[in-house]
Length: 302
Ligand SMILES: Cc1cc2nc3c(=O)[nH]c(=O)nc-3n(C[C@H](O)[C@H](O)[C@H](O)COP(=O)(O)OP(=O)(O)OC[C@H]3O[C@@H](n4cnc5c(N)ncnc54)[C@H](O)[C@@H]3O)c2cc1C
Image (cartoon, rainbow, N blue to C red; front, top):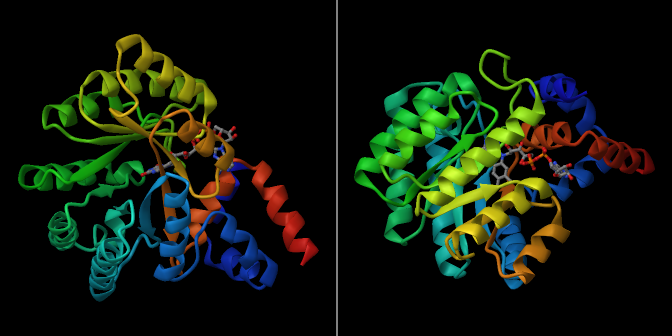
């Protein structure tokens, strides 16, 4: 089921089929703040009211036209303006294929640099999301170039990849701020652990390396076992709750988000918005096929 949903996340035909149902578009709102920037601003205001920080994510990936990547840069400049005007507690997350990675690496570098520089003017931060494994090397390379010039940029590492331990070692040498997640793409066995138990065990090892590094990192997961392991490790090492943050996705485990905040942990929620919500939405369904029944039930209810 998971592989099928990940496969369908790339299918335009299936998207057209689903979006014919008005009720389907409504259901997507559980995971996506809306199509417009203002809707994301509103969602983030509400999160901030609950003492939860946020990260704007303008949905878009695999862009193949240069002018569209420049439009994405302008959107992110608007995002930082809106954060500033509204005094929001939020940064932004970007994807390199949204900013030209599949067109030309230099174009992508220039685009990301413009976003990171703009964020820097507001003393804000840009997280570079990690996409599928054919793009890991180029993502790390572009991040490393930017890191030499800026300290308000961070990267993501996925515990399902065999290579992640080594990548973390070299990233920590350059003082990188890392978001640790399990990984959301359909990867071959040659690149990623086929067995979820190995991904989870690796997550815990990598979390310990990150927290032990003294740098401010993000532990992104909804998995209660990963969260308890993090809390336990931090307590044993005397690492205070202000030395790292938990991160979760918009609409996922809101109960756990609130609980961790009430217990004094930092929580940041990743808030996606925009017209190109389909692949993101399908990856969320793949993570928890039980969500599929929630979607179908609501679509059929009309
Ligand atoms: C802030 C943030 C940023 C991320 N950035 C990236 C990135 O840059 N690159 C990347 O590849 N991946 C990214 N991910 C996705 C990540 O890799 C996982 O696919 C996703 O978080 C699910 O893994 P999990 O750690 O929650 O554990 P899982 O083992 O998948 O889930 C554990 C439990 O969490 C709950 N849960 C998980 N997902 C859902 C869901 N969709 N709906 C409802 N309940 C759910 C369920 O109770 C489930 O049993 C990000 C995740 C977060 C939270």
